[in-house]
Length: 393
Image (cartoon, helix red, strand yellow):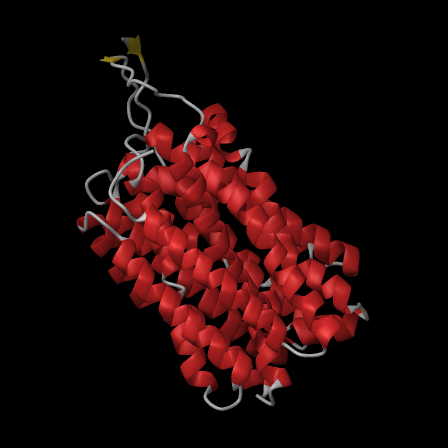
């Protein structure tokens, strides 16, 4: 037996709103820049290699910074750790629009460091503060995340036209992260500490790196992230090269993200009720494969259909998040698995946007890049089938 302090955040309505608003800030940093990437390249006079590096920066940062998230959560407490991450995000969003190529890369890295901490810690907040509503709150969280991604893609080109500058349009998203920080600061309150004895489970505190299931979930998470960030980083360019107008391409990217809202509200609650999530993974994986194949073979024939298939298929992301909670038996295990899956997983996914662009430059076509992506989606579906079986790490 050991004595432990119970200091989970109080699962209030205001905390749930804070979780949702924080989630809404976890993708506009990426999609807002992607939606005006052509103008950014022209303004800065940068190369395709620099652009490929920029699209890889978010996932690289998510991977490296995610290692620090559990330590920050323990050191500062969840309220302060998430609040600090939102402050870092806000600073990064401002810094990346004040100067040239180096500032854009550096500010994006700083902003994404803040996002990385939220990525890891918010699923822990959900499991510990809303233990009887994990599926529902995860659904709200991922729906808000998808909505933020969609709005970032859809509105930024219009903001650029209205404000006359991509810098002002991209930098304006700092106001949303500042609002999230204020709401989080008001709603995140730790419960009264107690010191009741709690039995230590056999194997508690063991390394997740020794668990085969944890590795399956990690690679599964990495591959679904690879799909998401490749789509967010390159879809407008793919559609543009196929003859789709810039505004239409931005709207289609937004549709891809918007579809995540209803999917996120449905998938996690269903997944939490079902003993196995393997069938759900299979359906979503097949839809993604069909969408990417359509873009590879006939991008201009039915771009709306392809992005709808991909957008629904990307519902595998909220499923991956809820499975981190479902495959663990305690908040501590959730934190460890979340850190492992998101740190290593995002490092895996970072190769996607960069390699995707490099292959395009080497071959002069998107076809090879997308066929490679199809192969990775088949692997993703197989790993998700394994991860969806009802057991814990």
